[in-house]
Image 1 (cartoon, rainbow, N blue to C red):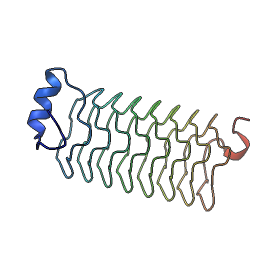
Image 2: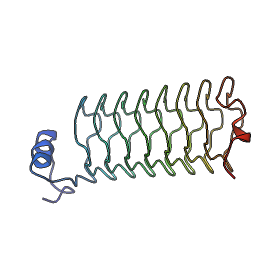
Image 3: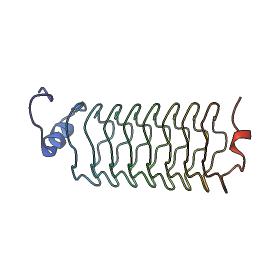
Image 4: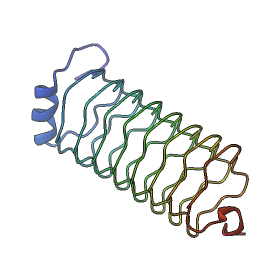
Length: 188
């Protein structure tokens, strides 16, 4: 099936996934309503998922590189080990999301909400997190080298062992961040 030329419904995707297919890249599911969906390891690379509702979805190990997830709702989703490199997550709702070990390298997370999200060991190199709300997020051992955190809210954020070389922290809110001076805790 050539996903580029044949319209595919979500019911068809679920049937094909159940039959063993995992590659659904380049599809258009903008504004789809799919809360609680369980599709671990699915490949949705380069898909248009703008304004999609994936609240509480289980997408561990999913390939979402280059996806358009502008204004997507991924609250409480499990994206552990997912590949979101170069994904557009502008204004995405990512509160309480499990992004442990996820690849968010070069992703655009401007104005995204990541309240109490788990980003332990996540790769955020060169990601744009300007004005993102990371209150209460756990960035323990995350790689933030070259990331842009201009104006980001890092209150009550855990940054222990985070790699911060070259990270832009201009106007970032660091009150109550742990450790209290993240620029002194980065790995050399």
